[in-house]
Image (tube, rainbow over all chains, first blue to last red; front, side, top):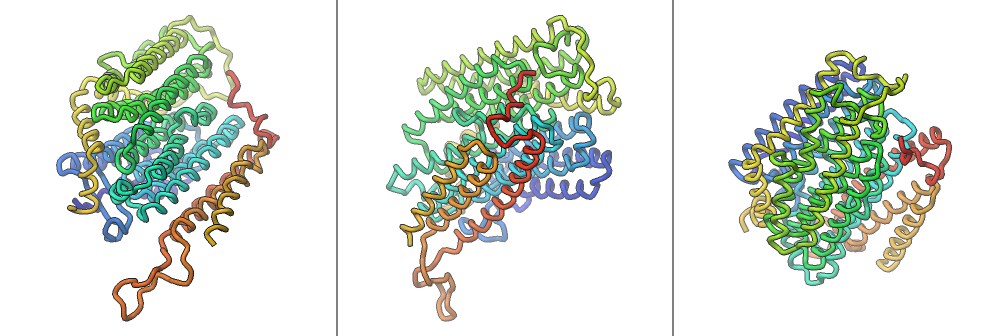
Length: 503
Length: 117
């Protein structure tokens, strides 16, 4: 069904960013506009989700150039689900930024760039053309480059050099893959590519192209052995920026992998084995990496890698049930990881340190906040009925269905590693008797902030914690959505027909 | 023509990757620029190089009867060039800033991100 309004989430964020640029000097106005705008963006995404849920995949052709010649935007259930999650965590980060981002950074255009980043993310999720996807990826990375360097501290600049290099390299690999694919098929429309790639007789060349895509998206989503830039950079920017990065940027790589490997390249036995091995090693290296860290943001960075492995494992099993698990995990992970980085930011604002060794006594001093922080932490472990449990349950069931016991073993091992890490985190930061820390002059502490800023930080964490609880307790509904997404991904005919018309 | 292009693309990729593996930041940027150009040339080559056949439909014809040069790769390359220009400009400023703050251009000495707090 054709519907031009599906580009609205993109256009709206663009409009919002431009509007924010007009209030360049008025910091308070920027905060207000960003928050209200993010709320409207959520409303748009909800309406779009409802419409796609009711009437199936929506398509729009830019400039009315029919597919496969023009640029296509496609909103299937997976796309709108991702747009909805993006706007939700965008809203939370936008509110959190009101309290947590220093005015010096706001003065250099923090809010406009944040909305450009969200625009890029929405665009990437809605793109139906592989080159258009590349362009959205570039918009995402250029915005993220500005966000990661804004402020210009020493650690930030060093971290961003690694981040910038690896992301530029990933773009080049992605572009190379597009070039080879265009040479093979003469098309860029993903639905059209799905048909044309299936007809190519030289399967070896198809696999080489698929591996180029795997490497390009693999660097972006931080899978083994391409993840080293992530723990070197994600802990350097302010927590609000880490939150949107940790929540969404690696997940857009996973989205692209899921899309490309279910629609264009149907993986053969070799690719399945390769993805499975990468998934297992990603889980292992992320989990073990997190165990030895002391900086709480580095712990969360390694946990991102560990859990990217879970999602890749679902792709490696390649059944409808496993993809369902992956999609459920994606929903759970975006919300929880965004929240965890915000939690780390709040802990820093209160205690003035990220070091696990120095932290302590948090539960005694702030029992209510501790209970709030417990929700994302224990959702991550997957203690029933919190959200992570159901996601892992379906991943493991998917693995048992195809008798891929090794991968199931790694998922269980990864869960135990996560449990160990979170338990250590909890006992060190919350239960251990804390010592009085020397006051840092450069840090603006939580109790020195205005009440509005304090509330903004707590409310945004509370908001995402409620969504986490909602995902866990209302798992039935999330499973309905995830199973429809999995069904659409595994049977791409409906996607192709929606784009190219009835065949 | 194709053989020449293939060799040039191979050299650009090889030189780019070699430069990225060096420790100096300036060489890193040069490596990224070379890689980007290599990718652009690859798109040009894989769009099939055709000489002297512009994709213009004559006044008496309805469709392109003869073989023609595919205009799409050129549009793709143009987009990619503009994007990589922006990114490289950013990367150069970043390297300059990093050099000012860290006072070294050796990647091995940039260890602030690994420090234990």
